[in-house]
Length: 248
Image 1: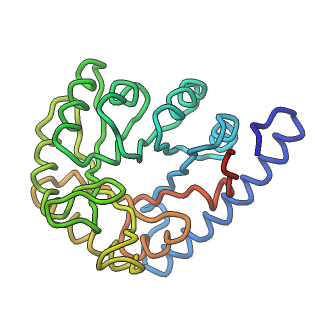
Image 2: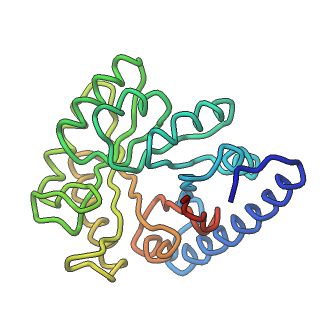
């Protein structure tokens, strides 16, 4: 799929995205009903990684207000091109400290905070930019108690200390927890159990940090399990945007 240019292409793409978005909306609504939750209790974040700014612009026109990216080199120019839109950008990928200044320039939240060094770097740049940055602790349910996961994240045993660091850091706001359903370990293939474990951790976190009530979990394939477990935010890419062919 190449970046879209002509008006007819854009109209076709808008129709496709509108249809996909409606289908995802139906899934979230049905999951909320099944779980006895209100639809407004779950926020959809559309993961726009690998897709062009034109898609982000279409999604904004369709009412999407939260978008996510996982690579700064792709996200920064896209966010700049869409700076006029009423969007909150979420950074969800593993974040190297040398990319922090750029990410702080456009992201409203970083969902992948998983180490003290990153907290220090984010705090420094948020203060420099004179803004408050929302942070989620990424929990690795495939890691040893105090280790790190294959796809980033801190083990369960490291959550409390890292959360305290974020809460105390100037320029940062502790908003809650995030996880990705693990591919290995005791929770592999058990998405609902993984998300329920994250909810347990969230409940514990809120005893010390009552405002940190955001729980980001679930993607295109398992958003129903995340909603059933109590997630407040789901991160959906493929189900909205389609499968983008790999380049090369």
